[in-house]
Length: 287
Image (cartoon, rainbow, N blue to C red; front, side, top):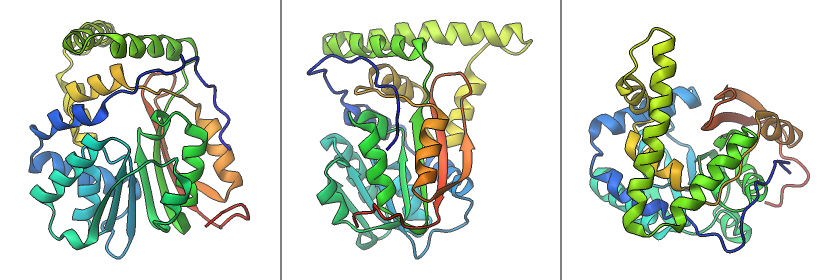
């Protein structure tokens, strides 16, 4: 469905332990970060409430945005392939959830089509920065799209295709996953420091304060996330696939999805964010 350039990857490549990173993030989670996540979700979905809606969080990770949807009144279903991420989501539900009856958490893969189809369809399907880590981004996007009801919203974030720069990032990620566990934090520090210095020089040349604190605060305000844990996720995250905005939008348009909102990183690295509305059920829907 979604033609993207598959970056060269070695067979039996290791998979980054996303859940271990999110366990560390939970230590810094507070009501202020939760409020920022709630605000981010409201702004992107252009709503004040999700009451009466079913919300599917594919790759719930820390569980922060499942919690945000729960706070907005949605009936939430969270799924994740990583057992530690499932634990993190359950811990957030235990610590901050209001009523466990309208928040279900499952350990499973988005690529298990029969299993995820059995969960039904949803008014909101959300997957931020996850589908490009499945090892089969094309099929993962198809399955996520199929879980969206007619009139529902599909909110996904996918790594931007930077060409040769994306191939360099793949090498950086492969190095991280090949290193002994005790050396991985040092590799993240080296890579992050090199890029933060580059960003600082760019800010200085534009006549701005070169220090990164304003950018880190903006990241927290945007999604309630931690700069360090985002760096770990970015440097280590495998599998890794990328796509241009056109490669995401055009095939989904053919399946009856209309783009409501788009935030791109231009030619930069990171995720492009897409919010689609499903206008009609296409004939190929297997649900």
